[in-house]
Amino acid sequence: MYSHPPRLPEITQEHAISQASRHKDRSPLAWWYRFSSSGESEQDIIPRGQLASILLLVTLIASIAFIPAALTSDNLHVVPPDIGLFVITFIGIALNRRGKVTYVGILLVVAVDAALVYTLLTYSHFVLPQNAVPIYDLFVLSDIVAVSLLPIRSIFFVSLVHSIFMCADIALQPHTPDLQLLVNQTAYSFMVRPLTIQIVVALIT
Image 1: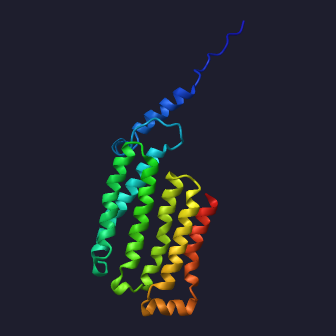
Image 2: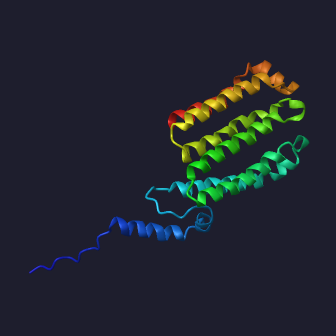
Image 3: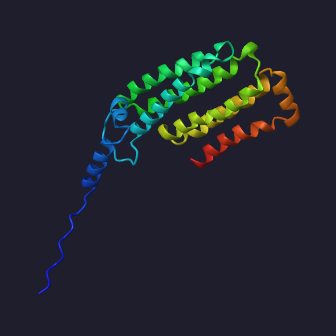
């Protein structure tokens, strides 16, 4: 007479969630999640509240990391947007702790865009230098926030606004001699990259 092999314990969904929760509590970012999110239980692979926490942490680190560059910028024009991002991060944390993730997304998109626009428009004598061109690439940061925390269709609006602003800014804002030389040599082809980034992000999300 053969004996049946011992039955393995059945792994239920509740057990799996419990195991994942215990693993999450041991995560290096567990303290940050507790500080910056509402702590509500969600079934997503990455709960939106925790995703917002990660983006807020990245924004906080970036605003601190940019302090040296802000203090050495022309006329200290990068200082106000850097301080603004730092303050906005803590407002976002307060909203995220109350579960207002969509408001966090709107706040971060507006704050990042406002910081970049302010930086571009406040160079000395309102004249755009060649070294400001890479700033256009950074608008993808608010695209990432929009894709992560806002309704998916919002990315089309966000990318469209970015593209219109970039085209208007490079066309209308006065150029320094080095940027004007680049424009003359390339016929604005250097703008293909930041505009392509906006189009690609909008289409693949």
